[in-house]
Image (tube, rainbow, N blue to C red; front, side):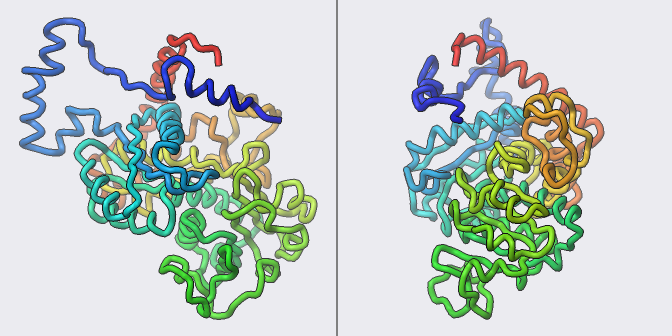
Length: 439
């Protein structure tokens, strides 16, 4: 049953102040003294200090808590290439999630440019303004080169959430699913349906968790990726196997894990029945998974199943990742989000799933029981402890790998995160309620 009507969704965006975000000052500006410090002549003092030491921009401006959500609207989830203007509601929504879940401020930057080199040049020029760059809804394969170039040439974190968000969250699920199933990553035979940005990033991440490339059977819309094909880009070629597999159905025989980031309905119950004991099935196509939760569990009651949907157990939801990853990276003043930080985020989520679940989380999801097991391998987004687990783990990994400009006292930082999120939510609720909208 739909939670809202189409008109309600449009009203949500249009009523009162248009859109979903507002920029507000954080310092008083009520007196002549305030005005003189906020702008001229007092602002010159901050400018001069930054001119002497660029790093002081993190001290005297909002840069250290400011992320750019950058998109050209060429691959908006579920909508395709709709362009920068049509994609802006999604980017504003991303900013709302950053703020609500991790108190990270966002400007959404929607660029009417499809040339990767031009986009790279424009994003690079934004570096003095932002503490981090979140690339969003940019189509493959261009998105790979764009992110790789920006990561190499910028001195702040660059993160393409369409690639790494799903990888990190499903990776957390994989860590716990392996434990429950009694399997080892290095022995896992994985079938992947989809070879776009998300699928390739997930597969790369699974390799960082121990999965062997030779055990990965990847399919795109034209079939199995194998060395006999001459239509593969460099990113797909990396997963081309020597011997061709005739069909997706054939690939499922004896497989331990399925990762789907493709289209709904591609997987049948017979395919699932052909998998090994305790199969791991991550059917993440949205809104319709490659096989439904009910069909998969009917075919294989021993399956450990996850989807991208909130109405079934084990939702792979990117909001468990990007706000908290950037929170930790920003607070450590990291120059990058590296592989170690991403693995730390996944491990932190996997660890949190093993902790007793607070009553408020169970109440929010309308259940009496929620505990680590087949139907609970990934924490819930409404669990307020996610920021403490993930952001702290990410900050620690940044410090351990030498990309942090700032060293944090981690126990104190964890406490600060809890208090910060509570204070931020109070501010946001007060502001939103001041509009008096009943939506």
